[in-house]
Length: 140
Image (cartoon, rainbow, N blue to C red; front, side, top):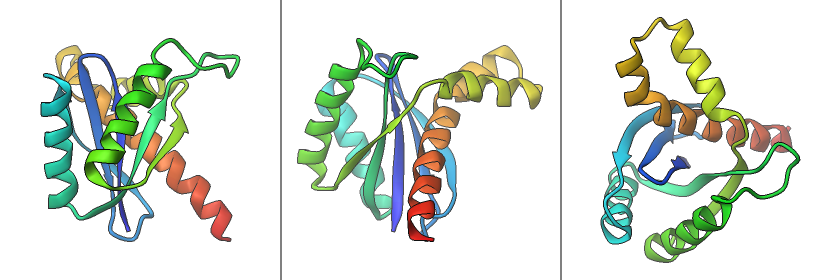
């Protein structure tokens, strides 16, 4: 039951994977966006390579809970991804995940350049771990 977590931005997509049991998430990579076809193809290859069974996409919301300006784009991308991969796509509130990722990376004392290179995949890991934790609570 391996899941893939995505932090979808306009220039990059942070990617994380769960362990095969679906308990823990770990950042995998940051994909530089090219175009819709290339982005979906790259994600399709990763999903096949890692035998992903479902995808969790961070849904951008405003602090008051309303959907942010980027939410419509993310939802559209997720619908196209779901159709192309034939895998279920779930959404998870991504408020403050990039802030949390930055804080983690600052505490790890990474250089500014290194933080920029990995912040999106760390954010994807936080999104996926939050989703897995929520699912785990429902199993208990």
